[in-house]
Image (cartoon, rainbow, N blue to C red; front, side):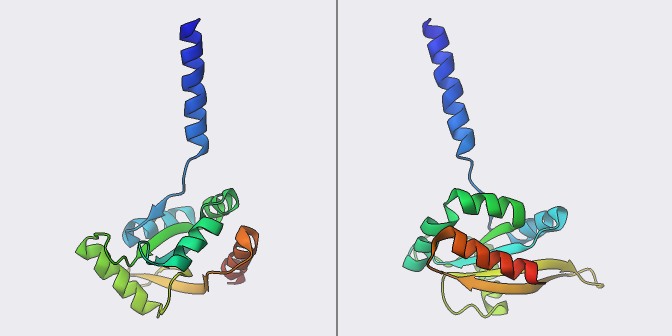
Length: 155
């Protein structure tokens, strides 16, 4: 009897863990671009200050950490976090990559989300064609997702 109860508890625990599967947020643009090309999806570049930006935390808590956003993101975009922390360590390669993208998209404030489509150019290089951007927006996940869907479907 104890064996059955223990087995049942393990199965329930595994199912609970599987249901709480989180989204994949890439930090390496090469990896994210390869996934986006393979899945034929645009990329959502999330420019954030993870350890200091209050509005970034708000956007994550009110939108990105909701089941609605999780379902939408899995279906529609490849997620990329481009972080600009003040005290969290990062490799020099990630810092360089993030600064270059910040300059390329003229990001002046956080949070900013750019939606881009990776396109291979005739010379073999990869281009990130901008579709549009969004920042924090009150109104919960439905409002934010609606605006993001408009951006990615417009082009």
